[in-house]
Image 1: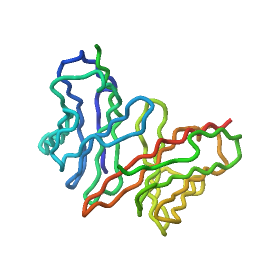
Image 2: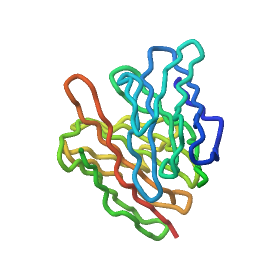
Image 3: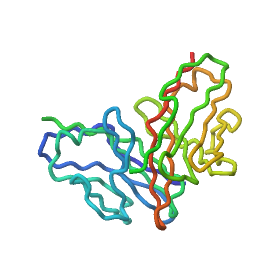
Length: 109
Length: 117
């Protein structure tokens, strides 16, 4: 069974402060991990995936297999980062994607 | 980027009636589409995986006869909620998977809000 856990429902930070959105997963094989973002009144969209090892909009995420974590980080939060963030997991071959419960990031001006 | 559309964006129906929701990939072909359900302030729950030309694979606990899925072409999948009841009221989201040189990208539709009265 595959499971994704996001322990925080809401994370409030001040503009310019560092951000870390936590994500832990459970999967028996080698997973593919993703972060999706949903801005207000917009559809869900892919932010980044662990295999790309890229930084999008200043966000990065490192897959830690020992801790089974895939935390999303950004050194300096911007107001436009306010959104719902979902951590997600799929098995190799990109079959079904399992989503975490989401964390609402609120950046305070 | 690739676009996935859903129609209708919202629908209100009476209890006992059936409602069909369409999901289209507008500029790419999708052999696989996914249907999700999202309750207010909750995460997306996968309902079923729809494969073009074959039967959908339903997740545990999802009634196949109630949520009929048809994926007749590479750009269209439909979800029909049969004999809808108020508890079926929810936000239904589809996504389509695009194959890209050995890897995959999944694009989401804007969702359909269903209200059953």
